[in-house]
Length: 354
Ligand SMILES: Cc1cc2nc3c(=O)[nH]c(=O)nc-3n(C[C@H](O)[C@H](O)[C@H](O)COP(=O)(O)O)c2cc1C
Image 1: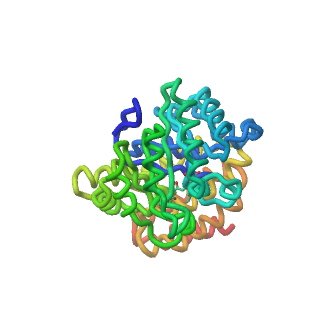
Image 2: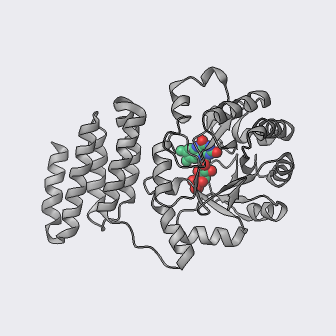
Image 3: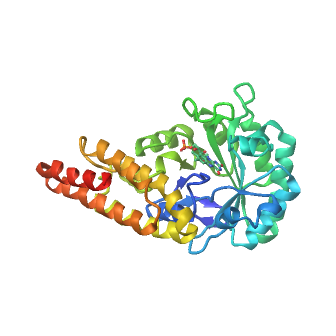
């Protein structure tokens, strides 16, 4: 699988998710089997490029190549400038966002709203491709199947974008109108794949190794992209890779493995955001991890909920790390000595409640 000159280790990609796929999370996903990761979208507005949020998103220190940055905006010239700006800061691939349904983005006629205006959308694609070409940087595009059920124009836009020079297309199998409702459909992706010669990536509701295999088979896509199912479960990529290579399920990771990954994730998260923001923005990741833990029935529900409630009361890195370590120890002890489940959890719950 190639994007322009870049050869990728596999065809299992982590989706860009604003507020989730920051550099620490992307790095972890790549370490655990994702072949490719795109940054959260960064605005093309020059007045916001110096903001803390945007400059954090444009920080790629230590990330493994290729570094792919997603840009969002509504003005072709600004988008071309944004491409050059991010290339100067290390972007090796530029991805254009025409898939995001968020109001904040769509009201400004960016994201998936651009699918309503094919002329403007293609002006943006051409301008970004021309800005990136002298640097040898490929441009990719992420879109939905259309604006609404009666305007599913992804196939014609895909062909036009290919002619304008994009190197890869990702399609989320929903319209803008659907938001995240209903089921993603991949028939449109299969149709688009049959029309294009560039790599096509299927996205939407891929939440297991079986689903990844089924979507690859049904669409003929070159790769699959996983978003929400990777939240708190970055190891899903190695599970998908193993299943597709061998036809067998990889055993779930041990608690000790997850604990190790999580502690590294937290340290990298605090290093990027600092203590105040880092502790708060780590809470959602912690909640997702706990939901994804391979714990037996009966052990999880109460302990996970209490853990979440407790974590929300802590406001220092040290306390958060300590609570994570202590909780994992208690869960591990519960697994090692099932008869002592009650005692260990009683102890943990008492401590968390204290
Ligand atoms: C919290 C969140 C943030 C997202 N942010 C972006 C984004 O910045 N750019 C983008 O192209 N798509 C974004 N998406 C859409 C995802 O990339 C993906 O297309 C969508 O979640 C469907 O894939 P899934 O079913 O595997 O989650 C976001 C989705 C979520 C849930």
